[in-house]
Length: 160
Image (cartoon, rainbow, N blue to C red; front, side, top):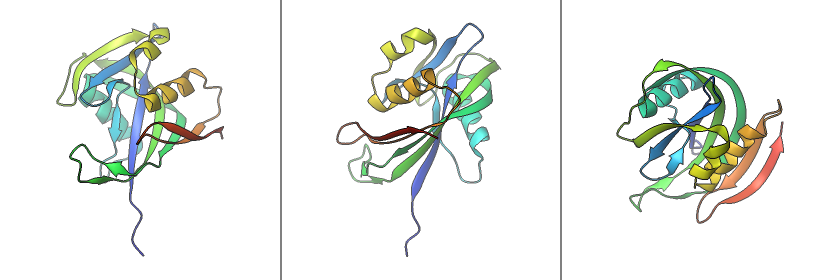
């Protein structure tokens, strides 16, 4: 039996004391909230703090889990050859505790947006759906299954 392969990733909705949300602009996804893949030997919290710092320059404290998502689409990477496995993502609310906005190899801009303007910036349907789950958070964890390729389709949406 082959071992299953999943990418594990984390996302951070970083909200400052004025209610602004941190977004980063990426090459392939437009405006998104920061996050990325968990590296070998890394725990989820450390991975999220690292990704936010790398992509935006902002130091954070991870507060609480708000959503778990499964992207069950299997598709080709940007190179058109490599298969991208299914992905499990965990989104957390985070608070900024320092740092200065900057960009990275992955981001061309890092900015704070008013909470009610964020959906105007995000164009990727999966990221919009996950941000809406943050806006709708009522104490229960959102669990969704979706596919992003060939087009976005929400297959399961529930709170647990």
